[in-house]
Amino acid sequence: MMNRRTFLQNTAASAAFAAISGLGQDAARQLGAEESAPPVPKKDEPQIRVLLHEYDLSPLAPERARTLIARDLANDPLPQPLSSAEGRSRIALASEPIQIAVRLKVPDFGEVHCFADNNGKGYSKPANIEFVVEAAITRLKRVREAAEAAKAAGVPTDPELDRQLQAAAELLSGKAGPEQVAGAYKSLAHSLHAGERVVMNAARHRISKLSRPRTEFLFGGLASGMDRGAAFEKPFTELFNFATISWYTWSQQSEPLESRIDYTRKDKSLDWCLTHKIIPKGFGYVYLANGATPEWFRSWPFEKVLAEYKRIVAQTTRRYHRRLPFVEVINEAHDEANIFHFSHEQILELTREACRAAHDGSPVAKRLINNCCLWAEYGRRANANDQRRWSPFRYLKDCVRAGVEFERIGLQLYYPQFDLFEIDSMLNRFKDFDRPLHISEISCNSADGPDPDSMRPKSVVPGWHGPWTESMQADWIEAIYTLCYSKPEFEAVGYWDLADVGGHFWPHGGLLKKNLSPKESYYRLLGLKKAWEL
Image 1 (cartoon, helix red, strand yellow):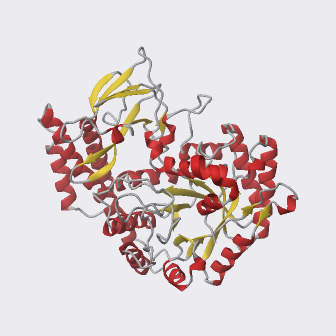
Image 2 (tube, rainbow, N blue to C red):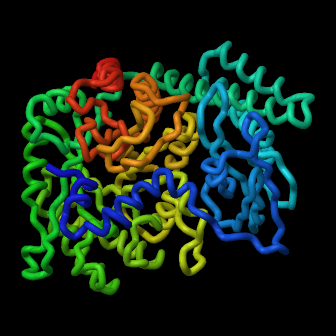
Image 3 (cartoon, rainbow, N blue to C red):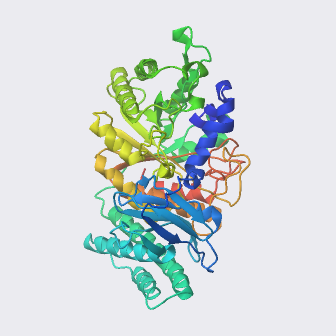
């Protein structure tokens, strides 16, 4: 059985996709997109001059400086012109206040994205700023506000949190010049740790107040691998009660029409889940990427593409009516997967009609719109028509305005380069939609360095709290699952992939090793499952 990305990698239609567009785009979306170059500002544009230093006062390393991005105060990216030189950048101001973000290597914490928002007001006038100083001030203010909110919600007092906040504040006072930069980095380390304590304390408090365990919570995994026998099947079925199944195969010939889709692989994976009493989630399926789109389909005009997807989605959901409770209808359509270069208006129409077709095929299936890249780093550049790119949040907002009917939202979370405080804030944004949320894909490293057997063989992921280890992977995964379980709007978390067996997506990302022996993270999740009575 194949998962979505393995299918894209292996189909005959996707040789070019794997090399330059599909899998390469996957890699870009996760890390490389945060380094894509924005346009250069004009000399007469009002600008902010940003000084960028490492802890030792050397210019910020190029691999981190390239992640600099302008955002609105809601945390969506803005395509602001930007120019850079060693240790400094100029960012054109926008028609609205902006905040600035860049990835920093913070001693005594790790390498994560940090934000500067001018004391919550944003930047709207020309200025010179030392980024790390502004970021330390911003972080301290945000964590203090979160700590006050947690206190008001009844979260017990935490002396260590109070100590971290006090130390962060003291390190920012009365310093200038080189000492100010060093003090700001030290302050950031304290307030980063403090922020993570705030959100984890609040999550554990919410769990402690539950009237009963959330036994309906879905512990999910990618079902790809069932053919590997008991060594794979046993740990999968012991841990997961929910699974993402395979999807159908496209024919490389458009005719005859009834042979365009082969459901053999999907049938097999669904039957496996149902036999093992695992709740399945399948695909509809609209995914506008090269490897998910046969060559004969790629030159079609919008009207013909729309009609074909409506037909396929209705046909597919009808085939699995009452056997497939969750259907992912469309994937990554927020200015990410769009090989046809459809306009926003066309994408919204396609989303609306695909969701309608899914309901026509199976009125009881819960329709899910899936999203990647929650911070939307790709939005540092506008679309070809100078239109601001959607973030997942803005795309979903427009879907609601356009009358798209759907029941679930999927969020991919491959982001260990954001700390838990920022992840918690991002997840909370999606409460606005008043729909159950799924973490549709999640993973992080268990070792440093590249993983040649993964689908991102050259990617090196910065360490969250230092170099990646099995224990750090377990810490990060346990924290994310705890945050999600504590939030009633989250219904499911789906891990991607179970094992480092080759062809797995995230470098060193499995819960099992290549020989299928468990890592610490696997046991940690089993412990959570037991504690939560799942």
